[in-house]
Image (cartoon, rainbow, N blue to C red; front, top):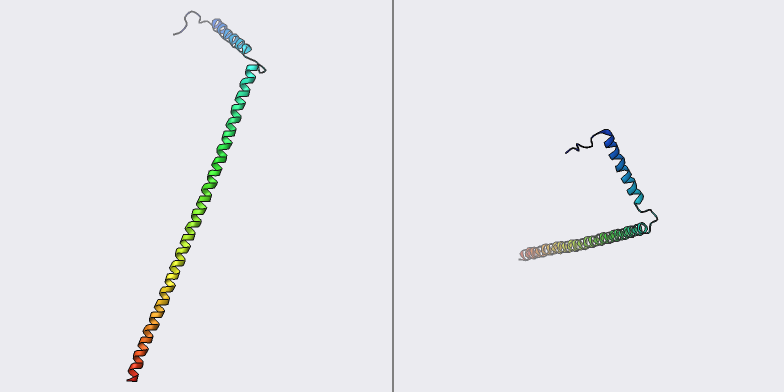
Length: 124
């Protein structure tokens, strides 16, 4: 609702001046920068900010350590996987080599058997 009693320009101007005076009085009554209470609050805020910075630095350090640990673990896992794959590949190669040697030996045995048969046939 509108204030029907004080609606003129001078009334509004006077209300504004009173509001400014109250604000100025409030600012004058505010504690000064060298007031012990203000100094204590500022020191407390600075201590809290410093503690926050320390916690932040600690979290960052722990995060870096965790990342380094994970990287080392991944490298170790990759190395173990490579070693297992290498060992498996060597075992496969040895098996293939042994199989090839058996095949050569079998072919030599078959040839020797065949040659004996031919020799026996010629001897008859």
